[in-house]
Amino acid sequence: GNKMPERCEIWKQAMNDASLQEFTSKQISKSEVSVHAKLQLPSIKGAIELTYTIYGDGKINVNYSFEAKQQKLPEIPRIGLQFKLPK
Image 1 (spheres, helix red, strand yellow):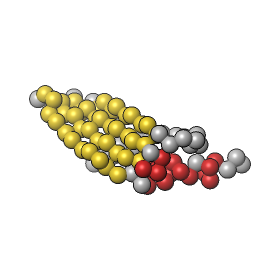
Image 2 (image 1 turned 90 degrees about the vertical axis):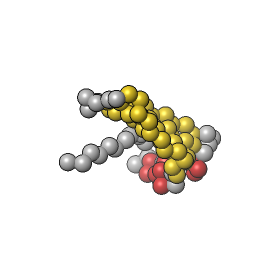
Image 3 (image 1 turned 45 degrees about the horizontal axis):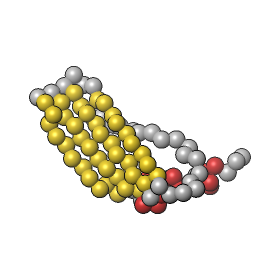
Image 4 (image 1 turned 90 degrees about the horizontal axis):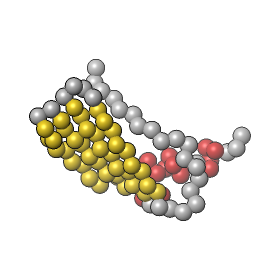
């Protein structure tokens, strides 16, 4: 095909090299909690910021921000999140 697995390998490596830089949580109200995480992606000179806001009614709002400062990166095959809850 178009050799996408080889061309886009740097994106897999970026997550393998990710490091957690910051993790905070705070009680916003009696029924609302915010959890914030910041990750550094050194192989692409990038960063990810995630904020989960969890509400008492079970709703979860996710705010995701991604930035890569390295020049001439290949296309991003996909960006996604996995969130697992215990049974």
